Image (cartoon, rainbow, N blue to C red; front, side):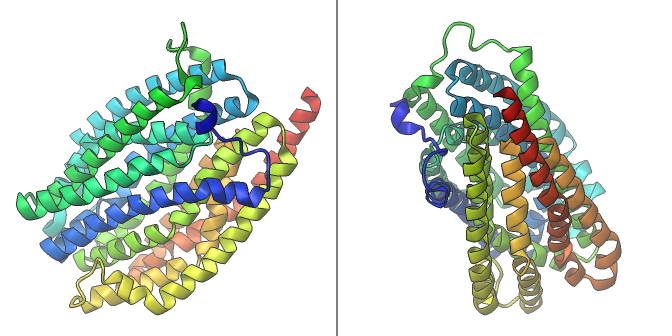
Length: 452
């Protein structure tokens, strides 16, 4: 069964391979964003604008903490993809086992500290007093549920690293349905308020994570552990951390800029927070294509380096950029003509100012989507090639840009200034990533020639 479940991305037409791998990942991410939108819509339309602002105010700090865990697990999957590409199944199993040990330890540590300091974090971020309690009610269950999130992200990343991008989608579809049903049950039936939406999200993540784990155990023969494979090993653990920590830091360093920006937006009042939250949900939904391409390119790069096929990898990069460009044009056209109506899914049509501000914010972000596409495509490909440290530098570039916007544009231009934060951040990252990829490619090429 393992041979049927895994997929080699190093042979065939690059565009077809990328699209074939990416589409299932994209479907999963769309459904993940769909139930995130469902959270927002149910909260907004049943609990009101203040509740929407409360949920929205937690986005950047969630990205900072959980984003690190997600980046860490994604980085853990890169050595797995490389060993799979090289056909070294014994080393592959040991990397998977050590990834499980490290992910579990990190999940416990993060859960304890994040949950313990939850309110203090929100106060430090100057969360408006009229939404502070709501934000705390939502954020605390999310932090307590970090182990469930780590479980799903690690297991799904490992499955994808073996070339199977479809299976995690099936379980995510199940989780999406469960999440929406639980949202309605907790909020509408039990009247549990904002906290109910967070609990629904955690439960759905736990279900999808357990499902992925069971599937891995039953269907991947190359992951059937043999004597000694499960032991925590210094060499494997060190290599995993060398890939995972930079990738996690890349998320977190980027998120530090987002936290500072959110703190600045918080000073504009709860209506501004709600506008940014609404547009951010829609923007994230549209950005799923680039997230899926990024996830694809990490596996693509890892397998190609393991298989020593750099020319084919380069052809894949060109194909990915073409896909990125076409989508950037299409999504801008859709947003230009239908953005206001799409935002009405998560904003009450009667909240005119919030709706108008959210539309402006959304248009500015979408107009710079090609910049975002290059960030995801190049950054994840570089990570797949084994140079995760460059992701940290790219994250620093994004962080610096968001801090500049937070301190200089938001106080003077308000929500319009905040809208330019992501485009400027993506531009800063691209200025670094383009030459970084060229350097990494030449470096790997030189290493392969010397090894030969």
